[in-house]
Amino acid sequence: MQIGEWLGFVIDTISMSFQISEKKVSKLKGLLESAIQARCSTFRELARIAGSIISVALAVGPISRLLISQMYLAIKTRSSWDSTIHFSPSLLQELKFWYCNIDCFNGCYIRPPLATHTVVFSNAIDVAFGGFSASLDGTVVRGMWEAEDTGQSSTFRELKAIYYVLLSYVAQLRHKRVKIFTDNQVAARIVAIGSSKIHLQAVALDIFNL
Image (cartoon, rainbow, N blue to C red):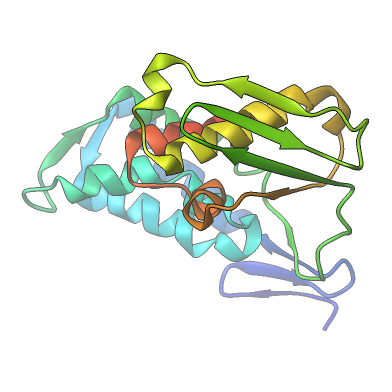
């Protein structure tokens, strides 16, 4: 087999990639469009959308978990599956993201990852953060936390350190594949798949958007 369809996926052994079939994309976008226009749905319908997004993870990659947290948080508040939920701005934004971008992210390679262009290190302590990349110009990034950041958890500060270090190097990192090293395993996991805690998820989305 070189190109074939299986369980709603198009498997291409020439380019070594998984894609969502046109029929499955159309069905998912239909569910999203209906929910976005109504700005509300039953919890059952919202769970159906979330399940559909998770089911295409092979074709869109880890983003399927990073950008679904608002749906899961909303579903947890249900009193019954058939009761109605009116979407919060953040939940509506998440649904709109998938409706507008599912085509862009459709297609995930199953061959080994490409080589990393740049390695970036970041670290955070109680009062400051810093970072470094030997493969760039050798400039050290450093800064002090604002008052509102110092009272946050170490995981929050590590996430913010990753964001600020990447932001400092953003012009040099354009079009590059970047590997980030942090000494906080929880922060690394949140960058990849998000968090159920709103303030941590917000930073993870800032990193993703950057």
